[in-house]
Image 1: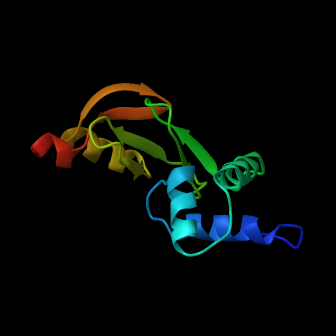
Image 2: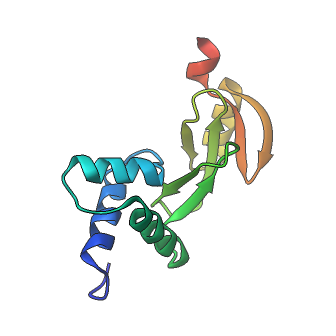
Length: 122
């Protein structure tokens, strides 16, 4: 973040950095609201969109048309579970190979979709 960034933009970005998963704009908004931040849903959504346009975040659009956000910008693949909607980061070919042995992949369109090992086992 630089000097020109607003305080609201800073708190949205920091909230995202606290996540190890891939939160939605609503999840970020709810988290900030619970912490007492005075910020609207539309503002959170707009800030996230701006951060994507500035290449500070990556947007992941899942099959259910929900946008999730990822601050990890290095090359990696996302696996989206069709049952629990959890998004997994697969950082290299070995991760992909191992994951495919444990998951039932149904299709790939920039994202790999299927059933994760947790849902498959239960």
